[in-house]
Image (tube, rainbow, N blue to C red; front, side, top):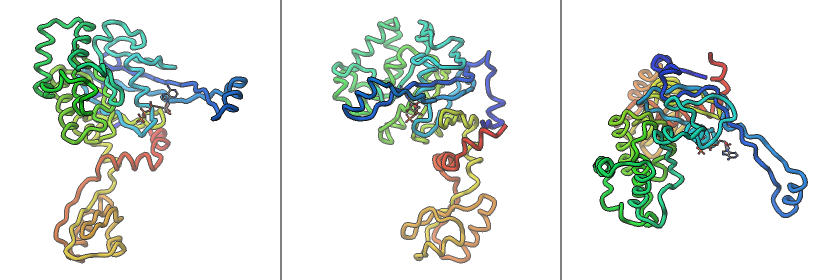
Length: 348
Ligand SMILES: Nc1ncnc2c1ncn2[C@@H]1O[C@H](COP(=O)(O)OP(=O)(O)OP(=O)(O)O)[C@@H](O)[C@H]1O
């Protein structure tokens, strides 16, 4: 697994970690059945079982107050890992400690100090106003009336909950519901947050609002946060360190910047042309990523950016030219495409 030096230096020792994970593994045994009645009968007589290795020997340590992005393609093992960290699933193998406790024991103190928010699952009661679910949580977590009011005021400042708390949850928009879900999950002021796709399906403004809320909560309460998101903007806005998991294995643990640099052996030259140029013509300067009308994006080796840009400016009529790092999602996408996990496993 690849570790960037900066993160290795910053990494917590197991004893001092808010979250300590070592050799964590989860295997699911899946019952497989052919479709149809015949399949059901066959499976009744002879059960076909298959083992899915969802998480394979994952290890990392997080310091208290650290906010880490947990990335990986679909089915990589992110949700399974978060469920093990929050005690919803028993690990098949390995050690997990969250604030010194073993999640699978689901001890009272442990449950009071964590929260798991899953963007795709809802915890609020569907037919009741969100406020009713908040009151249920107030009772469950034994939050005093004064603390409850104070927390509601704080959350309202960032999330603007005013007009929506008394509406039936099923009548809320997705964004409004997500704001309430987050607030309800954090009412008891947990010290550790597992956020699984908290912004999924939300528009850009609402994503910003949720991000702002998470940032504010993290800085106000020094909470440790693990965040999964398919929106890289969430991760780049909130996390300096990222963990990348692929096919159940941790393939990168380090600074976001160093991953961008590692994957970014290329840069993008974006040009606005003054007159149309053919695709073939542009390939002389690099690999043409897009060409739409007079706008083109060309990927060039990092070391040759200056030379290629100056050639472009000399040869063609250019109205505007900018040089940019490729977006981090394309860097990560490229890493997976190149079969990087196999390659990185060999990296000491
Ligand atoms: N309850 C289950 N029983 C059997 N297999 C499961 C179960 N839950 C997850 N899996 C399998 O484990 C693997 C990891 O799934 P997981 O949900 O952890 O991935 P993920 O990284 O969260 O994916 P996504 O980004 O799509 O949510 C997948 O192959 C999935 O099919």
